Length: 280
View 1 (cartoon, rainbow, N blue to C red):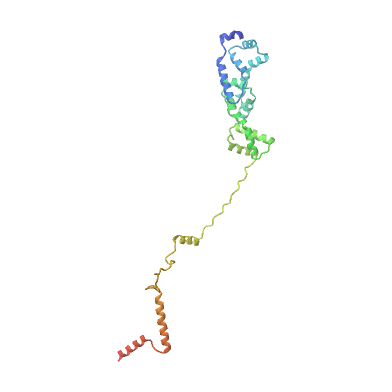
View 2: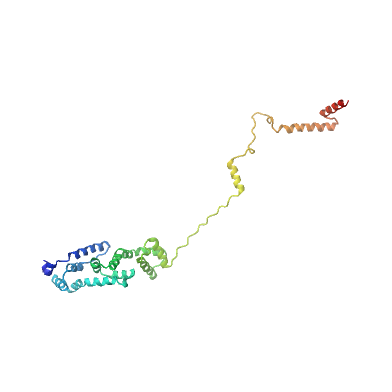
C-alpha cells in the first residue's frame, strides 16, 4: 500500500518516531485547553525520511491540492523560522514572547515542541502554555476586582488591565492580595482610611479610694465592733469605766453641800480631832 503513494516509502519507511512525538505534544496541548489541527504536521512526519522532491510527488499521488501540499512542505521551514525568532532578542521580554506566540499557528508550535532542542524556544512555549495563557484567561475576574476598588470602565480601565498582565508575566501580582495592591498602584486609587476607634482612658483611682476599698475588703476593725453585754443585766458589768464617774459625782455634790452649811465633812472633822489629841 505504501508503494502506491511512493516507492521509496517501502524502503525508508514512514518516520514513526516523529509521529509518536507529535501525538504526545498533541495530548499536552489538549490538556492545556488548546485544540490543534495537526493533520499537516502528521503528513509531514510520515514523509519525513523522503527528500523534498519525493515528498511533493507523494503528496500529489495522495490527492492533496497544491495549496495544501505547499503548506505541508513549508511547515518545517516555518517552524524553524519561528524557533529562531523565539531564541532572538526580539522576544527576550515575556510580553514580546507572549504576543508572538499568541499569533503563532498551533501546528508550528507542535512541530517545535516535538522536534526542536532549543532550550530558549522550548522554555518560552511551555511558559506560554502553562503560565502565561492561564493568566490571560483570568483577566475577566480581575476586571471585577478593578471595578470593585472604584475604577470606572473605559480606555484607562483597559490600560490598567494590560499593565497588570504585563507585570504578571514578570511574576508580580499573581496571588489575590498582591494583585489588588498592584491594581491600586496602577490605577492610582488609594486604600480608604481606616477609622480610628478612640479608647476612653481610665483615670487612676485616688489613694483615698484605694484605702477605703482595702478597708471594706478587710472587714470592720476591733474599735468599730459594738460592745457585747450579757442579756438580763441592769447595768454595766463590774470593772467597767461607766461606774466610776458616778461615784466621783456623788462626792463632789456632798462637798459642795457641806461648804454651803458651814460644816466640815465628816472625814475632815475626824482628822482634825485626832490631830488635837496628839498635840495634847
